[in-house]
Image 1 (cartoon, rainbow, N blue to C red):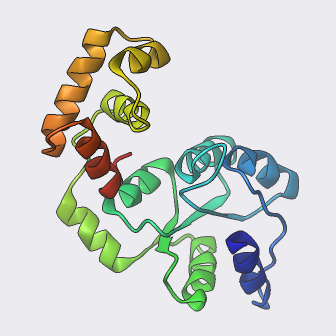
Image 2 (image 1 turned 30 degrees about the vertical axis):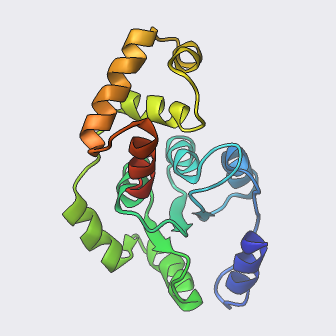
Length: 190
């Protein structure tokens, strides 16, 4: 419903045309290729593949496509990860609709567009202290999986999983794995 509403809003702009929509992150590259899009508007939370992963895939496969991330999750860690994935713009969904259309126009001109308050927060927060492997272990632990289940899923030993979890707990300042997952999610590190 949100995707269709955004498409309808953008279609009201005389100089913008919505040529395609993808319901899933793992459909983004194929859809962009099939419809020769200039700008892809992605959400962070998408089924099949996250918007951040879809942005990275788009940047690799179709480097000329501009990428706008629009999200409910205005977290500094997500902003940082979106920029690393190749996003040209990062806006939160509570921004006025006119700002979204303006962002699309600006990225087409080669500009980067970032919500100013979020940019300041990202600078103040700093980079994620977690390594990619620590993030992967925390993501896998998020559903309550045991160390043995995490080890099997990631092809690691249980001792290695314990070490990664311990380090992630320490780096997030958490008391346990559930709190580490919550902290990492709140900061946009997962």
